[in-house]
Length: 268
Image 1 (tube, rainbow, N blue to C red):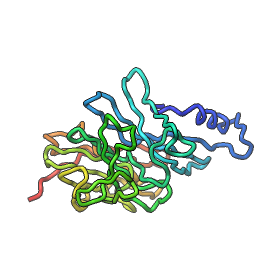
Image 2: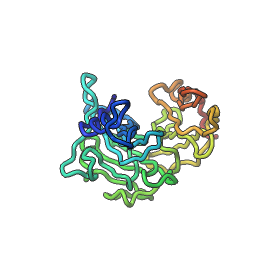
Image 3: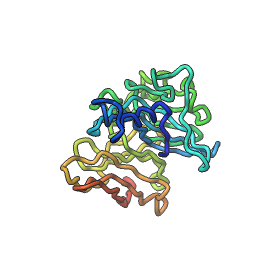
Image 4: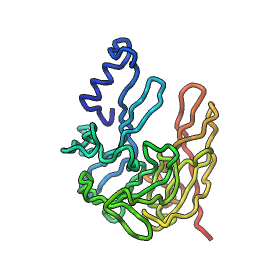
C-alpha cells in the first residue's frame, strides 16, 4: 500500500476480514486509505500525497471521514501520515479536515512557490460538487493555521467555512499550468453524463471560464457514468497543445484505464 494503515486500522481490518473474521455479524467492514492528488515541492524535493480515510461496508458502499496529506521524502520509504496532537478530527489523529469540511486534495498545483489545493465536495453531502480552493506555503503544509481559503473577488480567509466554490466538478480531477494556452487548465468528469470537461483560468483561483466538452468517454458496461477524468501535464506534447487525459472505464468484469489525446486550440 502506498499509504499504510495505522496500527488500529490494521487491527480492525484484520478482525473483520475473511474466514478468520471475529466480528460476529459485522464481517467485511474495513478502513480504506484512498490517495487523491499528488504534487512535488521543488523547494524540498518532497512529494505531498493527499488522501482520504474511508469506512467501507461489505458491499462496497463507503463513507468518508475526512482528508489529509502525507509527506513522501524518499523512494526508500513510503509516504508518512501526520499525527496531530491534539487531534484536529476526533478519533483520527492524522486528518486535517473532517466530514463536514471540503475534501481538500481533489487536485493540487504549485504556482510561484505556493501550494493551491482544491476540495471538491464534502463527505456528508453527496450533492455538493463545488470545488473550493485553499492556499498554503508547502513548507508549512502540516500547520493548518497557515492555510487560507478563497472567498471570492480576490479575497482569502483563515477559515474554510468561508470558502466558496469556484466551479462544480467531480472530485477526481486535475489542475495544471498549460504552456500553450498560458492558462491553468482543469479537467474533470461531468456530473450525470460521460462528458469530460475542460476549463481555463489565468490564476489557480480563477476566474475560471465556462466549461467546454473535451470529449465523450466510452459508456460503462453497467450503464453508469464515468466518475474520474484527469490530465497528466508531465506528458504534454507540442508545448502543451496536446494533453493526455485518463479515465476509468468499467467492463462487464472489472475495469480499465483509457487514455485520450486532446488537441487544444487557442481562442480566436
